[in-house]
Length: 217
Figure 1 (spheres, rainbow, N blue to C red):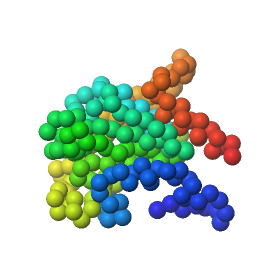
Figure 2: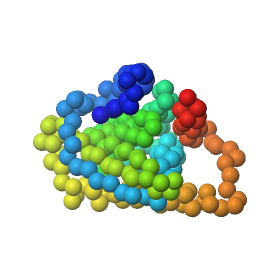
Figure 3: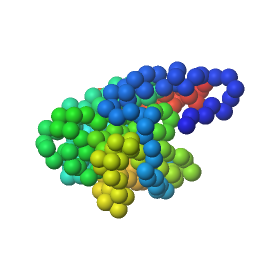
Figure 4: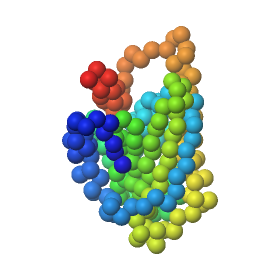
């Protein structure tokens, strides 16, 4: 649910800027998704750090070297769409991706992922959709919520059991959280500074440009 706090303003269709069209490539109907699980974390980091971490995928090969072998990081496609960022993540051609405990898919299939400004991430899998929502609690604390959705067909084909799923999904998230905590600790260093971002970090640059424009508007 999206709520605009003012009577007049930009429409939701305009705000999403084509992001729904991108997500419509997912093979399951979005209107049939229903929530099957949710939980949250309170992370000791500024809300922007988890977003920055999400928006660059070259860390997949290092941070998630074992936990996310299902993805092919060399062929990820990034596309800015309005204020948002589409991340097209292909699966490898290995059969084991069908049964990956955190992100299952079809061999050579794709996961439609992305960031919806200002604080939401969406990730599709063969058996479910996961959504992350970030809420700043303080300059150095963030509420990180996880929502899991399935269609009726997915529930029947892949019955959801949080005791089986959560440990593997949390393994992936905790790998990211360790990086985010390190980033938070680093900004307190007197030597901290951002000199240059790599081309593959364009998502981070895009996010901060949009955020800056939003604050100035």
